[in-house]
Length: 202
Image (cartoon, rainbow, N blue to C red; front, side, top):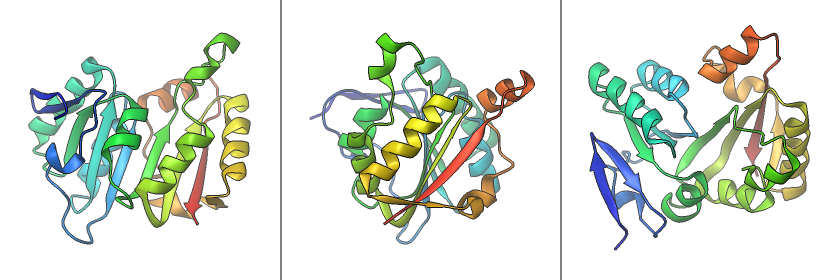
């Protein structure tokens, strides 16, 4: 059995295999489901959950301080459709989330790890694209954003080379185009441009 525990309503996932249904209530049949991967302070997930109470939302981050902040808002605003997980991203998407579970995966302003010695930490890899394709429903959407031009180029190339997704116009994320994460607001305040991409699963 995987080691897990609740901290202030936050599900703590560790490196053992854990089925999502064993730690969270499952969505209703046919209910839309989204993941905010590396949610930070949860601006995107919270806004989405408030706007769309019919959508099942997961907010996940590996830093406890961040997910505690999100969970406080969940409890304060009675957001019964938002579920908070403390988990490393690769563990969550490869070991916990079931096949064809999500309508959209949102990976917004992740750390680009710009130093050469740290590039192994970047999340966008061919293996991760296979996992995204596994956990997304048919025609599911991978939504990505970054302020880093090199990382954007790497993401474009990696997704294209996977052969698992096709690029789409931003109509697939039009419903959340006005929602900005804390990092996006910060980068824009510094004069940087944050670019969004949307790919549809084949």
